[in-house]
Length: 210
Image (cartoon, rainbow, N blue to C red; front, side, top):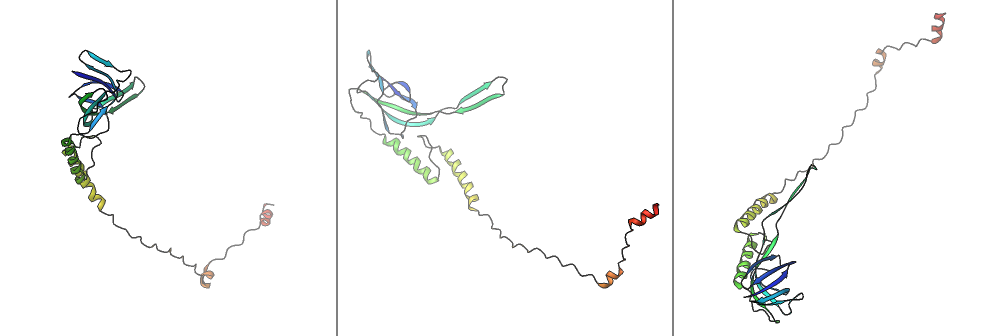
């Protein structure tokens, strides 16, 4: 049985024909053909060819299946008696591929694009575009439940945006009332007022003391 050791995403994988392998995220859509030219080792039974560092003319072909997020990994950092406690989550994105061929001697791959998988994926994208839901970042289209939830949220937000706030007309400001001018005192009022007594002279007070 022919096997090979390939390098992708900074990691090494031992693969054989028809193997389904999860590797670090690569670009592609379901049904596409992907190739790996960094082949470190090729073997068939007891005959093993080791590259230095790569095997010349070796190539591994595969079909792209999907890109998905893995389970959440919790990263916890804590220091005792320091009130330091940090908790974060991480979901790594991995691409799933199916190995189809292991080629040597500069041979070219004969793997063809999976038209059925590609048509199915494009059909899902078209359905999501009609419903107004953005496609997923991963290779797999969102599930129907997720699409319905997003559509319901968009429908709930749309009426709120459509309703315009009533326009309040600014009322003209009233001019400040003018203060009435003080009335001139009549001669009669002036006559009624008692006359002020003249202030006592300081000299008279000094004579009384003596």
